[in-house]
Amino acid sequence: GTLRTVLFAPEDLALVRGDPTERRRFLDDLLVARQPRWAGVRQEYDRIVKQRSALLKSAQPYLSRRNRRRRPRPGAESLDPSAEAATALHTLGVWDAQLATVGSQLLYARLRLLRDLGPYLAKAYDEVSNGQSDARVSYRSSLREDTAARIAAGEVPEPGELNDEMIVSLAEVRDQEVDRGVCLVGPHRDDVVLSLGELPAKGYASHGESWSFALGLRLAAFQLLRHDLRDDPVLVLDDVFAELDAGDRKST
Image (cartoon, rainbow, N blue to C red; front, side, top):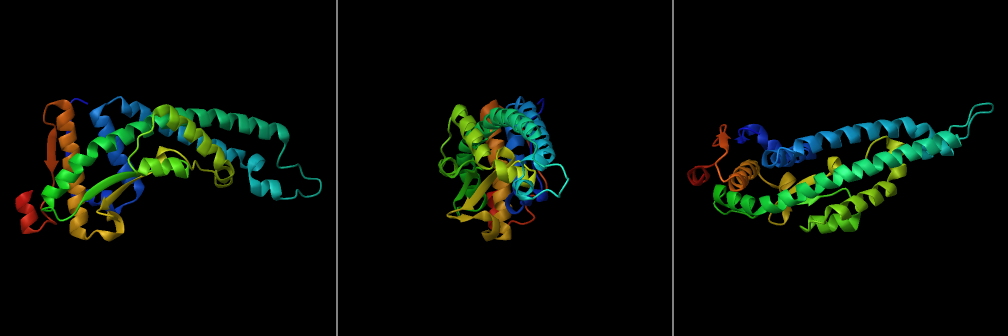
């Protein structure tokens, strides 16, 4: 938090072409750069997801639909003892509440960040690509369909609503989570959707467009931090012109 820096490197192509983990990390790192306190929230959320996933795996013998359907062998103990199942459900409910509390805070912060970042991204990509296309960014949530659609359209629900939605969404996928032993709802399952016009950049953008988009994201982050801090963060560009044509190099 002492020195704000923004680094663009060739590896940033993964922001456009890689898996959602890369885009979530970009968003969360920018959150921390704006307000360092979010580092603690990220760590707490990761801890909750890890603990809850461990509980889901340990509770499989008591709660899994597969085990409930399976007939025990003669003389064998039941795989669904009521006491163990009740304890597992109660403990899982406690972790659900914690995940929703911390997860809704992180989700709310991400959505506000994307809302702030969008105009800077559009301007940065326009300058890098000589106005060749319209760069957009939106958020794909793992919450229920109606809420996810509102979020994808750019709406930012209040933290309390996000908390309630996360609780309901977790309840709806409970059986799936127990069967698979993983958390299926929360910021760790979300994605940032990068688009050029009406098409998703991943899978449709050319190599040069993907490069320009990744560079646009970093330049947008730089401008956003610059606006927040009222001072210039350090901008580091590593081999930035490697994949740009002559016109784009000049505009950059």
